[in-house]
Picture (cartoon, rainbow, N blue to C red):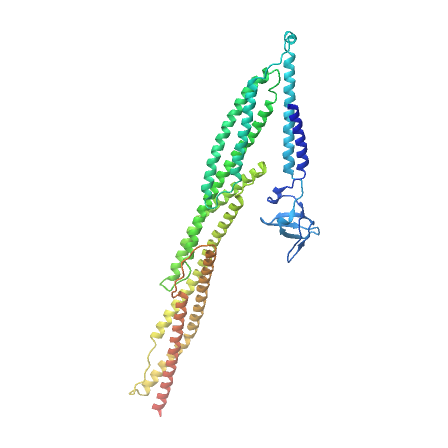
Length: 506
């Protein structure tokens, strides 16, 4: 029966070698290879730029993303098509290597079996001739052998159950609503699996200790099949123990990563909400300065979590390496790693957007601040000048000398007004520049808030109020009108003085 089992194993191994040559390397569909890979098109595909024919053979260059592949056609042109359009033809090197490993294990078992058989044969030859001449009787099977065989069968069943439970945990994605909590439950289950494995290890050691005296005292060789069972159980245990250890490391790394993702999501969400409140600059005293100080405070807060962003990427890198070890060593794919990569990438993008928004707003506010100071200074100076213009009024009792003196004074007033024309023009330019800067600031803030609303964030409705840009335009308009009215009034007054002087002279 034992010889038949070995022959069955050899036939299965031959069949596995034949079938392994027909397996497509699925792993290469997810992991970029360092060497070019020949692939074959499964269908016709056409885009605006290029096309692909069914059965066409091309060379896979890289996996541009999860869906599209970059390939090189027969004429050397680089093209991009959906990965589902292609088949990577057999064989799968990993499958072939696995079969060869099984072949080596079978050869080793046959070698040990032959050595054991030779040892038993030599043991029989040493039996005294007196015993050999004794009447031969069929010894009943040793009940210890049957008991140990039953124990090894039960051990194999328990190992298989433990493997099934562990792989189920490994292959099931964590809950999207509470990934950290689900991972904690998985770790708890893995602790129980590790304890079960430890108990099975003790059973293997006990079986090994029980087998040694049976092999040395069993003349009928009824126990000669037990070493194979024990060796198979030990090999399965070693593989399971290695997978459990690696999975525990991966689960702990993944738990740390999920915690860091949640932490950074909370921090970035807070930054986004604070930034969303800075949507317009209202007409209040020191408005630009207040907004600038608020932006700079937020910049310090955002810069303060840079170390957390670095840790987030480090945790992702650690988890990816452990997932790669599971995949390459045991062909077990981590179902959550793609989602975790996506979450980290989104957090990096949101964090960068906040940083860029703060920098852009600070630059706009700094430029607006300098222009606003000049605008206010000019407005104050021009309003003071217009307020204090001399009032050269002609009285009925004024003689020629008084009229002449007032006319000279009025000419100086008009000269001063003409000199202020450039200042009025500068006020207009500054007003327009400021309104453009402030409107750009508010437009950028509104656009950013719209992106937040697009991803589900609820923002308070904008309150209608007088903005600083509106107030600046209003102040400029009032000053320009006041200057125009003062100029027209003084021109009219100057004409009256010329007329009065001419009348007095006549």
